[in-house]
Length: 150
Image (cartoon, rainbow, N blue to C red):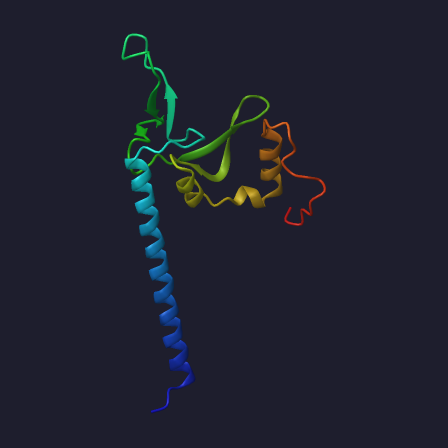
């Protein structure tokens, strides 16, 4: 029994779709395990996006050693496993908060990256704003590097 080209194509597309769906599900499960492990173990981001080190108020707690406090945004605490997604903001030269388009801040960098479109890095005006807003003394882009993406 011969298989027509059309049937073969349909079967290949179905197999490819199933494979892509399985890969996406597997990746999501792995990332969830990583997130739960990090949250359960209270891993602290070096950028202090989920917890920060501080001392309790004077009238509460022991001042002999610093404590870990979760980052809180509105009614959301990074102590929660679901995270605290919020829009990224940068202060401009007039000290005004500017929203960075489609860039999300979350408790863990991996969650922020996965939730953001990162389109600001592909928009010259937005990228230049980020570059000019940087407090780094070093130049973010070398003038000697081929910047054909901009």
